[in-house]
Length: 134
Image (cartoon, rainbow, N blue to C red; front, top):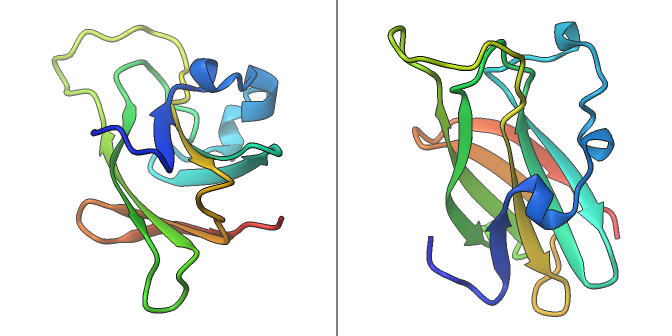
């Protein structure tokens, strides 16, 4: 993905987000690896949109940011993030431990105010939508 001054795509480690903030202490029974959860983290400088799949039974599951679009017919402060969800193939060698694939989209607050976040699959299905409170 090309560099954009308004946002950047980061790993949770690069964004400085701890495992506790990601909610890694929740039981796996509360999670669905086929869903995408949105969490918002704000500072004075940026807004982080944390995208996470549920707890996955093994390695090999991924969430990737395909596109980030700004504004919609409904709301010009809406961000629409299209994600690519990948699962391991039946013959793939994977680590045998639970994982939580996560990506972070960081927005510069001085360049763009995020009010709504919609996450879609590449097929166009809405996976989640959340309002952002300042």
